[in-house]
Length: 164
Image (tube, rainbow, N blue to C red; front, side):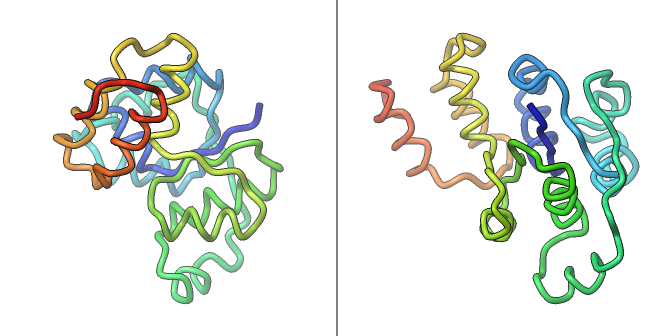
């Protein structure tokens, strides 16, 4: 399975202590040099920085950068988001990990399948890799990540789990 990630899912999962779910679910994750820079260089000392820097399950790949600066001005997305979408297209990724709603819309508009932190945690729960989904959602809410609590409640309802 070819999976590409933007910085947000990496950082958010690191903040809640669940970064290990990514290699457990998907074995290998491709990130662009721009995403690596956002997490490891710009984010030095922050959640996910050292983990991503030393992760053996991360493949750093180059995406075509010809039009990224123009696309950033037009779309308002970050270079990391745009490069992840670009790489996803170039390698025909099965899945692109993005949290930001606008970036998700752009990716879907380009024919990509997208999943964010909530979907990753749901997958981990469904595969028996995460025993307490409700607790993981509570940690998401307190991590500083913006997640609509209604999305979390709908997820819990659909799985017949106690609400937050």
